Image (tube, rainbow, N blue to C red; front, side):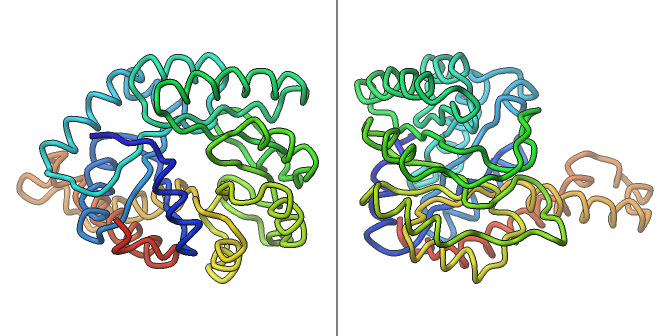
Length: 287
């Protein structure tokens, strides 16, 4: 059964660890993440971008697949199904489809419009028992065609959004989506400290978690980050393992072309990466 992310994130803040949001793209992604988190006894948030949902034929398909998989695999750890970087229409559609958690990304809108739409969605989500993530200050890089340069959020704006009673808050602290360039300046911990001072116990979210050095992630967690998003790293290890399988000619041996065999090395690589991230974030045995 899908659950809101609220309790798992409050527990993370209290326990000084972070829950991973692993973005899913298909059946293999979902299956391996769920199996590994069950083995590690870690709560988990499955993130779905608008583009990934479209690829999987829609939000209702995603809800049906994830819900059935939790039941079929006998998953007992808390699992939240979360819209990642959703616009207003996507947020409404996911609420309707049965998602248990929503991110409304109004960071590209004028602040008053971001506040108004977030406020409306907070009320709807509260009524339905769904957790809601809001964003202030764009996260750098590109996500489904939304491009941002990774500026830092204004603590005053963070406070205004946080005061709407959101479940969790994403705010730019120099992090970016995708691969990090060689000249990346690193996370701006002074900004994180200023934001934390005005949002109190609200769980903070670190987007673009793939590629940030582990010691910086751990420091951010110690300063109030309770959710770290991982997407690119899983895609990279999946692609690398698949490439090696084909370059070794394994797809030409026997029935090596069978998609279940072709995708197996990539699926195994996803599990290893999930295990590694859960270890760094400290969420094992917290379910």
